[in-house]
Length: 322
Image (cartoon, rainbow, N blue to C red; front, side):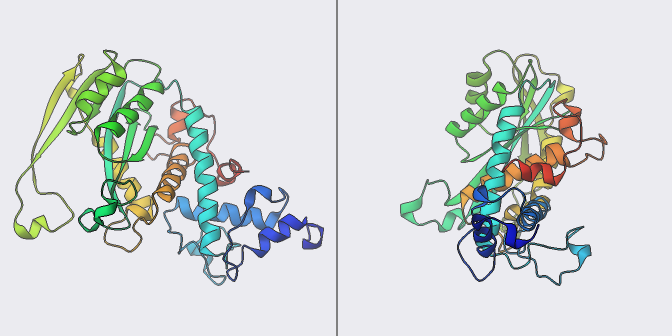
């Protein structure tokens, strides 16, 4: 379809997709048949799902095809505001879709953990007036994975405290169809959060890891001190000690750090706005659950869990925001 046949609102969107204009694109008002804009949209979803940061999503038109997959980069020249707006819209849509459709999950073993990031500055450098405010300093992402289907059942971005732990566990419980064995790390807030959310309808255990005291040099590194042992601690119900483990959810943490620039350590791609982290996490898990074939399962986690019957394409994910 030629540009002359497009609506004025579509031409407005294309005009504001150029690098010369700082105003972000308003994609909800775009014509659905606008091929150029749609390709920009899908291209941004592709790059975001591959873990590229917002700045690196601004592809140059002469970028080799081998670096951008099968896209000739229609995204070339898009401003960072355009890319951020796209991430915001598709991330919000992915969150809504997963919230509505990941329900009545028939799991037997669920593993829970938290992964750390920071927003704007490290916690020690947060200004006194911003202490305790989400979006300044430490930010934690809670995740709960089905150990069998590898489905990411629930996720939540927040602080590592009792209120967020309870809210997260309440959300996890609302998505399950049956009693499960739940294993968490040693975060003390779960001792109250799990009984408050699940009642007695859970077999709950903790895997408490004990680390040694590192040398002064080791204490300055990002990695924890050497692991001494891991204690399997049953809490409520009758958990099977053979399955008290957080291995799968910790492996998921690695996937997150490899797949999202905001979680990569020792770079300048750290989090600047907590809302954008929530959108990025939603898009990441939408791609992980529905579009990425798990190498062990040979299907996607959503297919293994019976939530869908096919591997989703990036175009389908992008269409959620339209």
